[in-house]
Image 1 (cartoon, rainbow, N blue to C red):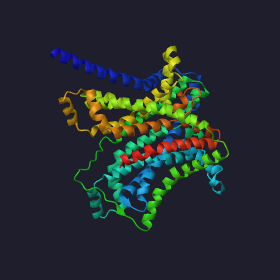
Image 2: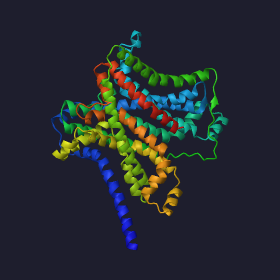
Image 3: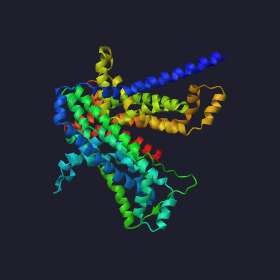
Image 4: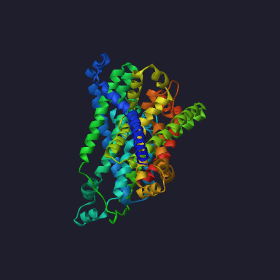
Length: 522
């Protein structure tokens, strides 16, 4: 009997480590292969790139990331603080509308504003600015990405205790001083995490910077791979980008290493103050400007272009083919990613060693890598391993789905991890007493309780796949386009009505998960 129990325990442990090791190996292949390429000698194009272009790529990447980070922090923190602590007209509407710019990819905003200033409504202005440069890219991307900071800062400001702010008020501190000296420092760990998401999106962005002529690392990777045909140069640039991401993660951990603020359940939370007169007008303007510039104006412009194109016959049923291809790719892949994330999250829940949890955390690092880096790593690895894998995987939906699995595992893992933490361990113990094994506990106990988390993970991953551009451009099969790639290609060819129609579908599909994310953060 003991031997049978021991054999069963060993087999379970082996199966767990086999699954965990296999998934970890699959997700670690792209960054590991790219990192190894740095130790190989480069070609003639790498020598040219290193001597003439590398410094330019680095400077523009740093300037773009710094500018967008500053812009998103200003917009996200100001709107998050206003909505969380004040009551003013239309506050309830602004609360969810401020999150909607996440539904519009930055590259779509980019060509909307380029056309607006060159040939659209603002062409009559005497001071019409030129947006086709670094400053224009920073402005557009700040408007598209500030909701990352807004959602986090609003949630953390709403959960702060009122006692500290009231004590400062009794000591004569002004509203601005209370915010800068008390509220903002206590929110710093959470805001730092959202700032890291913004930086990752900046490093991943290709459509906006390429369209506006800003030479960043992502643009350099595409040039090296497609224009120069230099695989090694593309991978060396990707390795440098991985190093930059690693340094950013180290910096985040260092900045937040000693910052831990908690609010006891018995603490009274902040109550919103009613604003009237000029103060109410200022609060409305703080929320109205980013909402209008980040969502309302671009979306209405896209609808108008799509309607105009449909009237003159430029939009036909061909768009339905791209929609079906996108759904054909996004739905099964999102289901696969959520399934793998669910298994990993459950393994983490039942894991008994810190090493198990540490290995599972490594599988989430793909989201920190730009899509171009993931794609280059996978494609270069497939080209190197042999003719058989090249024949069956290169230029196929399988390779593209694998790349999405690496890139978006963390997106699915986070809501499932949070959902499992809300389930009491006593339910697992009760099921075990009744003779249920771990798989039965997962299916019969946890899955019914994880419906909302599963739905959130599925929608978030699906929309990320829908919007992903650089990864899809590199790995998509021949003559296969998604809504994201076709919208970008039409815009690059100045075919705005056709691009607007595809973009409207992307935005409409992205609005539901954004609203769900907004509700989950309240």
